[in-house]
Image (cartoon, rainbow, N blue to C red):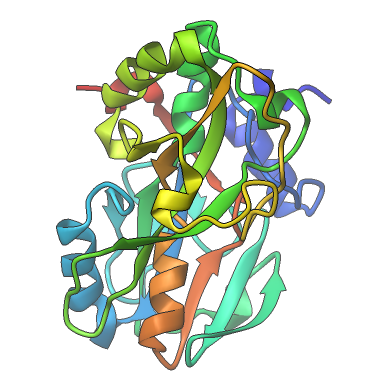
Length: 261
């Protein structure tokens, strides 16, 4: 099935029925996708401040009211508990399990955060004739922990997670310009080339997602990634949290063009 040509509400119906429980890269061309972090209200201000101090990896698209699981601005009739293909349940900074529905885990003291996702600018790259390797290979984007230290806020601290796409040398500048126009979904790359200099030991062994082929004449280009909050959760160890599973995003009803400068 060609999910790239489907509308967000069509794919979300398939997600709610369990027919789509896999990664969403390349789905719903032209529509923005979003990462997720859900926390008890007592952590919400510190996490909001953490995001504001680290806008590259954590660009906020929407914040829910305490105890309200309905999505307000990024989708019509959206439900935070059912509209991601896969969720992660965290306790004390440790991943406990992955599930496809968090209705039974929702509580009246929880606050959700929707965070911009680099999947959103991939259709813009393809439109500009820039190859996106993991889509070509039918895989999840490779993501890596780095040594790039983030600005702390309250209890929240940690290092940046990045996503990587191999780009032909002659198209790197174009890729920078295309993505720079979309700061609400991570914007321009944070690093180009030399994975070792940002703490990545083996480019063929991502910490999240899947490895992809890097051809001769291509440069690994790294963008800030919305999995960064999961790294912060592992460091901060809140007693309870819910996130999306890496690559399993919320597909919004908002066009990428509305998130540009």
